[in-house]
Length: 128
Image 1 (cartoon, rainbow, N blue to C red):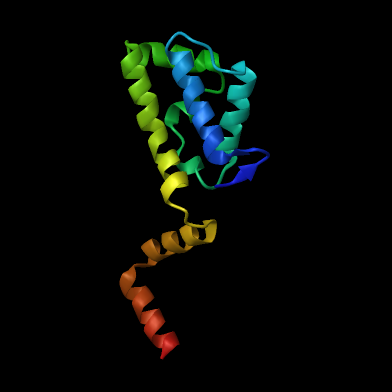
Image 2: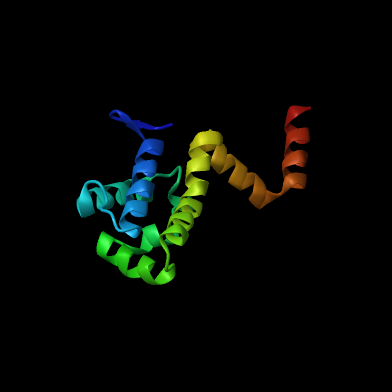
């Protein structure tokens, strides 16, 4: 986990998720719009999770925009909670279980681009 003060990135993502659940179910986001914007910026800036950020977090720059979207997207509180939880699951799972370093992710991406046969040929050539 990445530490920033006393909170890890995972903790801050949980706060963002919980705040959006609260906002979507008739309660208030703890810390209001300024806290939402701060946490949203952290997600958007993190090389670890920005590719997994929910579309609605990328699109909704403030809580008013989020509310304008969620109230029509899902009519019930239960559906809204489930939508938010499912949307955040990939980011949370990456931070909880996929402890691959940033260089490991780059290497994995490059390996996928070049294909296994090319990598195998390179390894055989340079290790024998």
